[in-house]
Image (cartoon, rainbow, N blue to C red; front, side, top):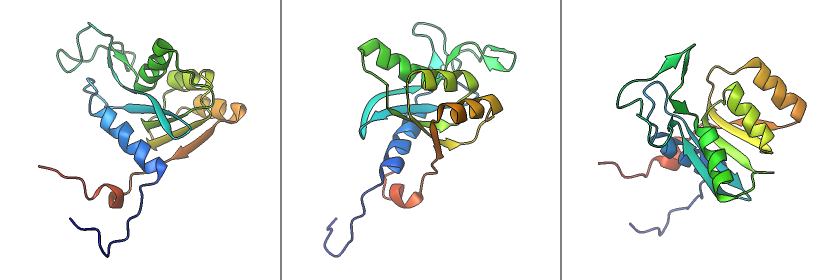
Length: 159
């Protein structure tokens, strides 16, 4: 394909990173909700995660979700997996940003804030907890909703 008379528009960072978070969600092993999370610092990816079981444990897609009190006990959330990946490899999260396909639950929100992540980008509202919103406000953490724009993904090749 020739690019001669075509104006090339680079994909904005928020679309680029949210697109990657969505790709991570495709690796999810949870039947109830596929979530992806990407941690970024200085426009560079430092970690990614998706929701799934503890390494070596049965996955929800293999048996079923182990739901107690409305939560799957089997699943480690995408945000936690990404933060744990940073911890495992000694990568600091202070001042980073996180891109998540769904608004973080209260537990994940606390972990994100405690990890020093300064901005949360999310795509879909999902049981947005009032106390999580309160914590965002009192900590001064920025939150922004990002919706994927088809124009940036229209040229992807599908079979």
